Structure formats: C-alpha cells, structure tokens
Length: 238
Ligand code: SF4
Image (cartoon, rainbow, N blue to C red; front, side):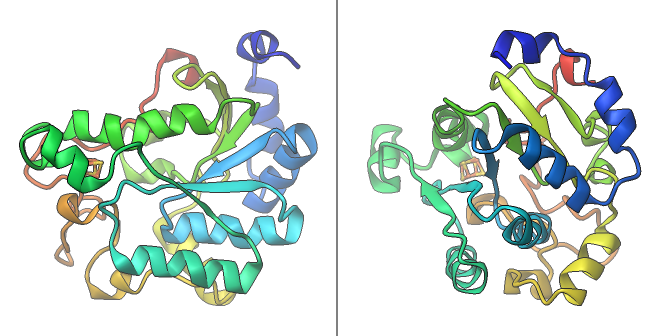
C-alpha cells in the first residue's frame, strides 16, 4: 500500500472489526499488515512497557524507539536496560543533534522554562519525523481516558502529521487495566510510579501529583500545554 493509498483508506471498517479486541489482537493485526514497515515510539510508561511485552511474544523484531531528549530521568533510562534484559528488545534511543549543554548555550539557557513548545519540537518532534521515514505505521501507547483530546483518537487511523498510519492498541484500556496487566505479567516499570509520578516525561516538565489529581496533572504543571505534539490530532484522525 502506498502512502497515498493509506491516506485515502477509510479505516472505519478496520476499526469496527478490531473494536473490542484485546490489544494483543490489535498488535497482531498491525504486525500482519505492516511489519517490517512497522515501528513503535515509547516513553517507557506502563502502557509502552505492556505493549513491548506483548510484542516480545508476537514479533520482537518490531523496531521500538525512545525520543531521548537529554532531559529524561535516570530511572527511565535504567528501565530501558531492564526491558532489554527481560525481553531482548533493545529500545533505540534517538537523540537530537545537540547535547543539552549545546542546546541551552544556543538558547541562552533552558528553553523549557520560556518556550516549552519549541523545546518539545526541537528535542522530540524533529527526531520523530526522522524516525518514521520509511515506515508505513507506528504504534503509540495513548489511552482514550487520559484526556479529552486523546478520547478523540481511534484504534487505527491515518496520521497526517507524520504521514503514516497510527495504531493505538491500548486506546480503550483504563489506567487500572494497564496496571492489572503490568502486575499480572510482571512487566518491568519505572520506580518513579511508586513515588507519586503516574505520568513521566522529561524531569524539568514532570512533577509528582497528589492522590486526588489527574494522572497527567504533573506534566507541564502550571502551563496550558498538555501534549508535547506527538499525539496532537488533526481532522483525519477523528
Ligand atoms: S518535555 Fe520539557 S524538557 Fe522535554 S522536550 Fe518538552 S519542554 Fe523540553
């Protein structure tokens, strides 16, 4: 299938067929349809780790990558190594062209303090655009109940922003479903989750949250920003 064909494909029938399926079945469909031109991005949240565990049983050859901004927590990078040891899946760390020191020197200091959108663009989006070149589809770990914005996503759809099909196998799972799976399958997870961090990104833009707060309240706290731009939807994905 060419990119043009995929862009014009009506994914409604596929979504209807996969609706109600276990994420493992959605992944199996994705592998049968797109592999080896199938890739996955992960920030090593429990969702991503659960998907990696499923992929290790379906097709461990799927290329998985992480956008390593230079601002990740040490615990996140250590989790990458534990995943590799456990499942034999070496998540590729994709880094920007500049180190954090170079980037901050270029911008007169940390840009995340004054222009987090630009920082996310430079440290993440540019790398994602490069990472998906040559692939037909990518897997993400978003859940519909994480935000009103994410609730508009579909299991499978054309991602016009990055020009390939996007698959969201965990879309209909809840926070509880994910953790039940992680615990039942002894999937490695970030120890910061046990210290009040339900959602973990870069350390400057992540804080612990209280028991009553939304699980993503600790991301870009104090800003209107809720997404780094990887999962922004356009009309073709609704
Ligand atoms: S999450 Fe924060 S530190 Fe990370 S790329 Fe975005 S603005 Fe920069």
